[in-house]
Length: 432
Ligand code: ASP
Image (tube, rainbow, N blue to C red; front, side):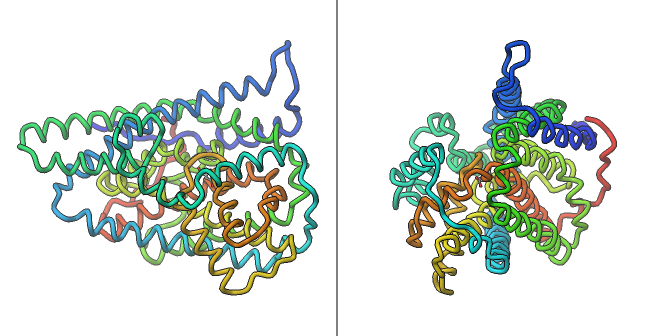
């Protein structure tokens, strides 16, 4: 039987975040205590936490999808679910991009920016990114498409190709429904067992959430520092306002008007996943916690969660899409290039398409932004204008990516008539 799921004490994580920002701003990256680098200690502990989460992704996602599909019984429900899922992915991402476009036009952060020659460090970062774009040039979409059907599933998994994993698991689950009932039941139980075990595993890792969050955030602030925010403060504020409008106005409207659930309850249900996304800047690493929250705290069935959340983590990047649009428009403004309506439409389209290919890892959007700049004919050096603040904005857009996926899961679940979605008050005062 599934154990009752309790929540983490939210205040411990909240204190950890505040403490980490304070420590990160005060202690310098080179600081040594008893000849030990403080940064290295935070880096090691943070990476251990990240590794423990990432470790769960493959077995959790595969067992979740396989048992979900196998239970659906291959009765054609998948087509309907898939259509709804893609509809919500598309509408939420489009809403996010249009909100970004609105704010960047309204505030015009780039108008106050004069492009200056980029520093050496940024130039190196830029050339690495440019190389990535050139290697993938033109083939980005085709490369993603080819990843879906791998010739060797183990090799694909070792490279962390989520789409291959999802495709393989979907087909595997479907085939289980087509074999004799006895081995099918055995396999079903087997994968359900793995799924439940992996959820327990995730909950154990979450016990050290405040420590992991502290180390990861302190590390970011030790390297980025508050001072870098000043240089592109207006860009920073524009992105934050747009992300906030999408998260606190647009998505709650979707939840309230379409799904008819309380957005506040959903925020409370998703709190552990949102905090993890914020501190790790990786929606892939957060995936185990997102699945746990959507199923156990928001009450979405495994049948829907197992499909909508992992697939959303791979292809539905609303926060990243918004960011890409604002960043491209910002560069155009900074270089004094006026983008007419058709070109702005192209930016929106490109943001939507490239966000599908953005991996759920830190700074993945930068490559997509370079692609957009290239297509629109803007100077790639424009990236150097805001790259210094990218990491902190990454924490925010990743949180939005994860929240948007969870909203899509709720929207699909409610449209399928699920009765248990967000009915129970999430108890945040208990520890797991
Ligand atoms: N870090 C983001 C994520 O994991 C991707 C990005 O926008 O860079 O969702």
